[in-house]
Amino acid sequence: MYLLHLSGAWQSWIKTFSDSYSSVNIRMHELPSLLIGIAVAGVAYVLIDIMLRPRVVSRSLGRFEVDRREKMRAASATYRLFEPWVDELAAPILRANNGLDLVQQHLLSAGIAVPWTPAEFLATKRIEAFGAAGIGFGLGWAWGGLTSALIGCAAGFYIYEVLAKRLLKSVAIRRQIKLKRRFAATVDLMALMMEVGAGFQESLTVAAEESKGNPLGDELAIVRRDLTMGKREDALRNFSRRTQDDDIEEVVMSVIEGEALGTPLAKIFRVQAEQMRQKRTQWAEKSSAEAEVALVFPAMLIMVACLILVAAPFVLTAIFNPEG
Image (cartoon, rainbow, N blue to C red; front, side, top):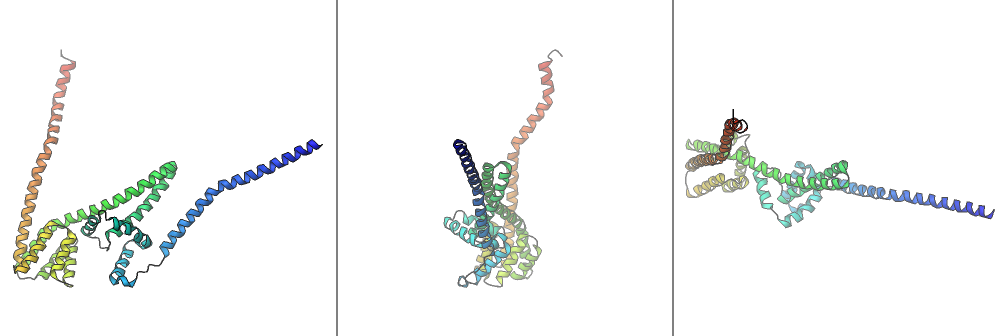
């Protein structure tokens, strides 16, 4: 009887221990999910706090800075939602100063009206790259687990950041090409109008209207606006700085020097228009000569291919059927 009693007690104790171990094991399995949930909730809280936090700019920075930030908030949803993070990320980018001058040049050449600083533009694109990294992580996880998720995260971040810079450069180059193609005819038009008695601002207004829909028209409209607010030299130098074009810089410097020396502007514009036409002709001749050289090798390949097509039947017949 005693042994039976001891055996029953032992079985009861084992059952109690097993139930306790199972309960603890279930709790241990639930712990990672609990920690992940807490982490996700914390990230969500931080993001919501940043998005809803009121944007206050100290008036001591000046009215220009307040207006500038208001324009950026209106133009960019990323900046509007994550302005504190943009400021935090822009500071180390500005200290590193890695290619910021080139980014500034591309921002000006692309005609972007948003008053970005290069560091703020790059910081905004980096925040968007974090979003692309999150999408890459989710797609990688759905595709093949944690390893694929990490690869997708890194690839999404890197590809988006590189593409953002390349897209800015591409937009700047395309805009400069459109502007350059129109500029010689516009200078010719201004020279013609000034030769018949029109003033500089009047001819500039007509040129801006004629170039409407082209980037040159937008730039000339800015020059016309600047002329009403300050000196002609400052307006022209800003025009040259924004466009970053050699022909425009040459015309601007000629106008500034001509005004200082008293040379008629109509004569300056006529001479510059002739020079630009000559440059375009020389560029076309040079490109044609380079194209002829570049086509020699492909033409030789085509000629060899034609010879092979013509001679191949005779060669094959001679090899495989010499008696026929």
